[in-house]
Image (cartoon, rainbow, N blue to C red; front, side, top):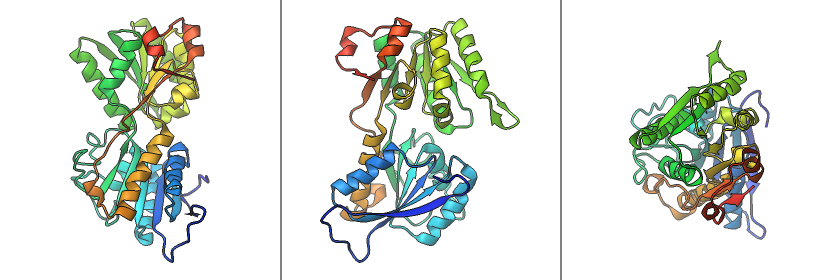
Length: 327
């Protein structure tokens, strides 16, 4: 993807043997950090269902200042459906459900979102069963309480630490919920925002933050959903490994493509496919998006990185090995 400005690119999605209609539904895919696995899942679901659509891709290149232009492009295009990727972009493009500004936010077109964290706390929708606006979608992290139980099943603990980007709302709300849940059971979360100097996040500070948390007694490093941390995943998980601190991730890339010990995750591809199902209901089933509940996947993957377990000498319980997916 080009990074200089929002890139608009069109593709036609036609399954073999499907005659092209004179006018295909057009889906504008507004992305935050380019095409990735959830987009694959979304596209492939529609192809597998032999749904003939036109996909038009617009990429913000991780630059929120581009979102207003993308919204204006959507208003000019008037697609049949808008697909939004990620919490940060979704919040910027839609605004809060109870504070929508038609001069700044998408208006008058159905929307599906995915790779979004807690859309209720983030005010993307009024509630999961009843979104309260012509918007629906899929959440992609397991409920935080379930993640906490998954960490405890591997290694019981009372104190954890979490590094996070203080400017990324999906990360902040997840940290808040984990802190509340730990406090309710007599534990504590050492919340460690990445420092910001002259408007720039300081990745070089991450190892120091983790070392200090370990010295204060952290037994786990919890990694919330966070685009910035994903970019720094090698630094983050490598620092935890250096300190002998097991790390547990809410999303798959920290385990699959870095050195996190474990994670209870939704596969990006599966989330995208589930979002494709919701898009199909809207475009071909005549269902209004506000009548479609926001949901998570019904099953999650417990990822376990065995080389990290060996290096930490933190071997999982046998009962956990029966359900875990080694990577």
